[in-house]
Length: 328
Image (cartoon, rainbow, N blue to C red; front, top):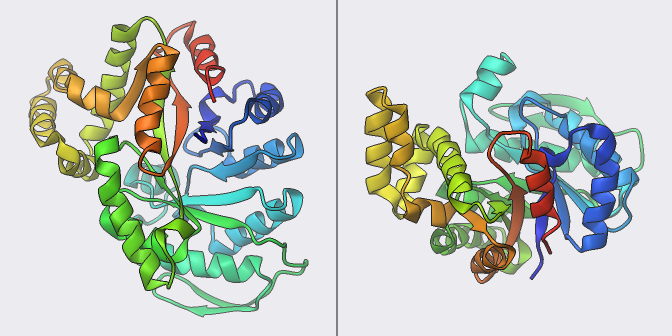
């Protein structure tokens, strides 16, 4: 089965990234995903990977759509498409109030319409079209790329959690990135992607679907699962993720976690993440067991993205590198 790799967590020190990217390529990983939050900048990382690889695809997983203009995204995508023809995918998401509003000081009102407009402008820009655009979120006049349009055009992937973003991705994007989802819930997301694809005269087969899977190859299963429970708790206490997790079949756990959290019982909230949730949202254990878990996602026709993680500590990076080297 094809397997992708999330490289962002392994990218320190940055000087080691070219070697890691070449190793990912030689190991047979399909795509290297690089995200952007409060650490390394994704476009620069993508450029670094592109200049040190020949066949590895590079995708952003993901960049908040609000923190750069669509024109800048279009220019960046066109540049990388020239640098690595057929190998670059710009990945965008709606992000969060903390990242967009508090960190970047920008208005945050997550809107599927804003993403729709941005994708349209980015495609126009990268295609070398003259951009005159009047929308709800963007009003642009008379921009045109002054370099030849790349061929093939850069791809665009959208991070999707709920039905509306899944449908938009199916309608306007080349691919979709799912996150924090159990294999059992993947078919429901795919049905929404397919619905959007049909609106555009396409089929589900025309949309690439990848899914982030937090993965740790280890013999110290319980300690790692405790760390995973803490990570999940951080998401479960955010309303949009709590709703999504409940829709994935974890409603009882979400009630327990959020009741404990609101009462100030942080330890109790973490304990509310049951084995059922951990088994659904991560892959932890020996390599064969993790591979089997990744296969549960692949069975639905999506590509698992190994996102190495480990409990904090001096051996964390060595552990994550071990996970990286266990696949594909």
